[in-house]
Length: 160
Image (tube, rainbow, N blue to C red):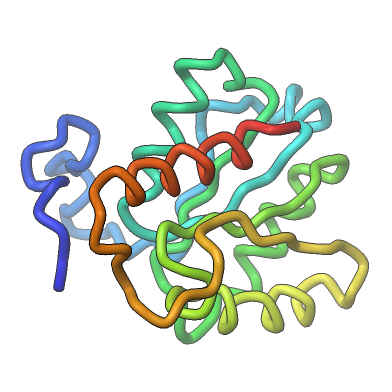
């Protein structure tokens, strides 16, 4: 089931220039808010996919961490974009690398992405997981628990 929360989200849109002839689907969307000359000072490189991106960007901006955390969207999980993920890792050579997902650890893309990331970087860098813990059910059944889990996820994301 696809969430509807992004239907009217002001950031979840593309311009017509993104769809004209000569353009193509972006398998990975880099963080364009960080200039090339500041890339060496980025402390954390975060890969994510889906709507959690918008939560991460809001948290990063609200906490003035825009120059410390780069957030890269992986729009195509399979086939895995080895070349573009490697390019982003090379762009931020001093950053810790994380995969962030809103889903539980055993229900999102983590178990697919993690071994492919290791192949991409030949084991030279480690990717850690940020998200909800492993669970048998996809939902907690409690809105308060869901909100608490999201708060914990965002706190882990913002920890440098």
